[in-house]
Image (tube, helix red, strand yellow):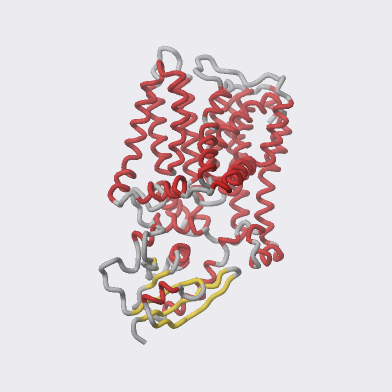
Length: 503
């Protein structure tokens, strides 16, 4: 890295950044494999969706299913195969952010330092450390948000006499793809609105056209929702608007949100922020000529609006920590631009190693027998992988009893049992369906894949997977129940039943 200190050639950024980010992804892949854990219930659900690609699903738009379909086609349906492209998407998001910082800071030695700082600060956040080892909708969202930031910057820095429209149109395509990843991408519109208010004379048309392109790219998901009764938008509204927090709990909800944002950035990012502030008298990153907005203002434009929206949401109802993950792109960009001129490369190396090692160490701590026993006794927070353990084992133990009743349909009493059974039994020709609960559907499987629907005749006998004894609603549908098998693994205690109308 000596050429960075001495102002060497800018071509060194790409190999340095690629090597660092590849090493981080490999470390996380190794930690994930060493944990021995399986898929989280949401990951198993997304994997199941990937086998039946559509333009939408009950709770999420379609990008995550498509990404997992590509990932498993490349790397098998193993746990690593399901997660691989999502893990790489986090690394690519860091790489795009590094390129953006390099572009902002002049593409010379200063730009190299800014690029490395910004990319590695993002890669070292606890959000990247935890979510970067899983297949979630945040992975394509982060990549789309980072790419949209980079294209927006290129549009704003288009030289006089050249048209910024191509950059805006590309940004619109990426915004649409981001919306197909997660609806949180819509919050980037607030950042664009600020740019429109400040620079509408030169960029107003480009922004309007970009918005139109984004809507066109996103429109298949809207058509799918319209054809199916708006399940995704309805679910999103339920968890953001309808799930109101009582007045007595609003202050606690806001405090939880604010504390959660500090956790997302992590202690290393906070320390770097303090050090940068203490050295604020030093020069900041250079501003390229022709820019419509300063680099730091630009970075804050893509962080603060989302944080403010989520803060308002936390007053009304609980705001989940990962909802604001894209704000880390703006925060890490701002910190990277400042740190590159105020802190040395030794600080960069040390902070990156510490930031990556701490989540990895916490993950590997779950290999301790004491931690596992604590998780089984009701303290799952001690084991980051607690909710992903045991599924393959219990369904493997239930499989022989299932095979003895080849002609009976199979249902599960809850969503997590449906998707985990489908993943564990993916090599068998038995499709596990959702139990047809009364009332409004609560998940994708109750709405789209129940064992029977209203107006259909229920089967005379079925196999049912449940956790514990069947509840009252299940027993009302079938008067006769016979337990065929029971399997335990850690906190899981699953049972396979034969339910019938006649003895």
